[in-house]
Each structure stands twice: as C-alpha cells, then as structure tokens.
Length: 58
Image 1 (cartoon, rainbow, N blue to C red):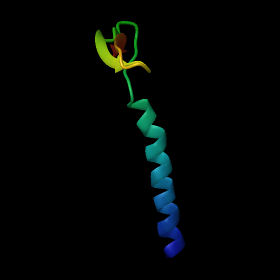
Image 2: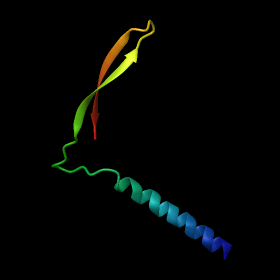
Image 3: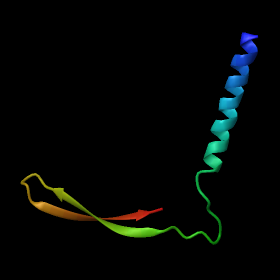
Image 4: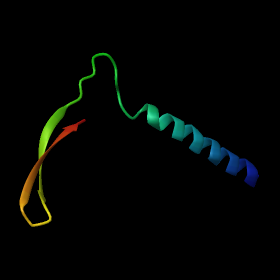
C-alpha cells in the first residue's frame, strides 16, 4: 500500500513538472512583449552617483 502511494505521488510530481513550463509564456506570431526603460541608481567605488538605464521586457 505504501509503495502505491509513493509511486502515485512521484507520478503526480512528474506530470506537474512537465506541465508547468508549457504554461510559462505565450509566444506566437502576433506576440509583442511590453518593454520599458528603467533607470537604476548606483554608486561607483569613489561614491559618485551613476544612473544606468536598463530595458525591461515582460
């Protein structure tokens, strides 16, 4: 009985792990990601302020 429960749990985890990546993102011919520019404030070794621009797409 215990072996059946353990094997069923392993089978369920395997099925879920294969199904999760397929739900991750929708990419097709008409897909356009939403992108924007984000400014990040950082400091260099001497304490000077540096603004970096980073492109973030979702």
